[in-house]
Image 1 (cartoon, rainbow, N blue to C red):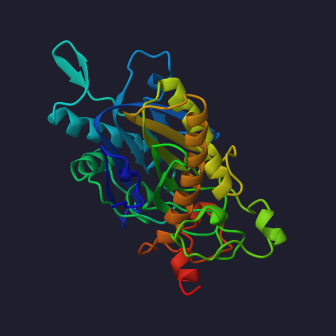
Image 2: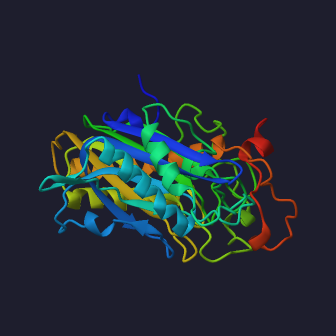
Length: 344
């Protein structure tokens, strides 16, 4: 049975923690055993942790978990909570008698979304990370949860999305997980149709298809911008056996999925970051052709996950936009797709 989640890749679990009143949260992705991983950063304002060690020439070959979190720089603390939970279970890179859990991560900006950020001296993200790791499982919620709790797009509430697919012509499976907090739109202009519609499967984000005509305003640059206040974070995973260099190529290919699902994307105002992970269960029959097929499937699956995340998002209490003409620094969160188009 498939869940249409990244957890259709055996050995992957996902957990969320957060606070709707804070309008922020954390998502932890745990691997049953260490996995090969890589990263590709396209946005101009990323916030990351432990990404240098993912380069192919670095000594540490595998990672134990990944963290996607809200909170901007404060949210980098979430990885420490995941590290703490993994250490309690005996996981980590062996250095003599010591084991050091390897947990890269990335954060998105959600500090101006109307939530109560008056947390005092200690932000809550370390505890979010611990709770997300502790509660991780194969079944997990989508929408306004975890790293997607306080996420937004240019015109609609953002959210946490996931999807999976078999890779045509191979024995491989690919999955995607994404926290959509984009500077651009996931929909075609201000209507209900998603840019990712050509890749939709089984009506997973409304089954509306692509509009007969793309309005001129759909391609217009968003009128208002708050520098550094956006980022879409994603992980694509596969059961393939990959090297770190091949995983890096997979992350690069998967970025196309963001370009298919969001407009505009990869701007200086974003910190768009895509991780790739390979659990190493199925060898590539052809190291070139199968990797190309895998990258193409990852891009399509990530595009679907973006639309699913926005489609599943819900409004948060006290975080709605009350004055559409206000400057972006005082805006809360825009309406959710379901609130505007749920009857479409």
